[in-house]
Image 1: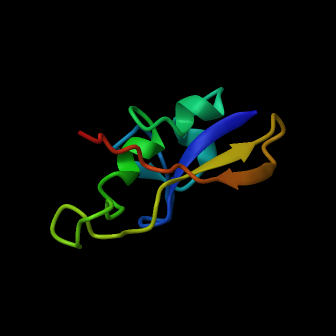
Image 2: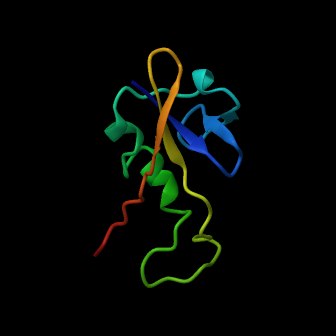
Length: 93
């Protein structure tokens, strides 16, 4: 299986985390494991921390409640299998 990050805001796949979007998943950064693609410290989960409003906060310039980056799964033949959510990971003190 191949996992890539899809950003619905720009309607494209990400070439690198916090990087340029490309229209085709074959040109995007590819992950071999779902856990690496959806990781809250390096993958799509990290990108989604600024898109979601954390508990106890309201919308402002940092937290705008934008659509989340998703992880799309493809098989070895290039067929779309399914989409995975990548929830953000917040640091709680």
